[in-house]
Image (cartoon, rainbow, N blue to C red; front, side):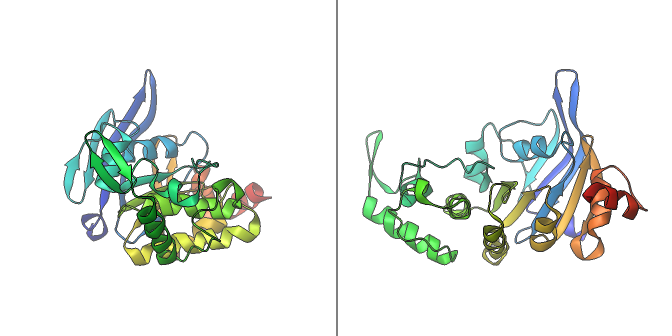
Length: 261
């Protein structure tokens, strides 16, 4: 209970209906500032639906979202972003033809407002982008480099930089290493872990046990749209978590062995 009382973002008794289909059923969730939480589950377990609710894309059919101790209602992803909740999508959602600094501030560019227009201060945007990348220890040739010239790992790093450029308090990542070369995975996971030191709560949806056990502090499993199990990483094993994904608790070693082989 102490952990939950210190939670930055909570969901209590959340249901989500799509017509006659119940995608989420009485789901409870919490994540604290500076915590990296892994969310696992098989396809159709409800992971993406829950994350879309937390990021404002869907409204819960029933239940309550609580942010920093107060009930909240998100009418759109913009509402969630204004609260400090950002989503990093699996495809990065970057504009390949634009330079790094423009991608980081796209739609939220620094500048002066005249009437209904914003006069963008590109020099300030470049300076802010360089300082932000340096703060996150993200190394690129230049903030003027087009995103399409970057490797997959660099693009993921830019997507994370964009998500954290406006004092994000919660960053949700959907399969953050799925599209990366093996040599780039470690750098991205280290970047995710470094967000802890900035006090950011990070939620990772991943099928990769290596990612979960390297980067996360705690793991929770959804099964068929409801809570199934959760544990600090130090108190569980890969085989046990794989068993949770399959809907089994207890003697999971032989089942997990079959699953991974």
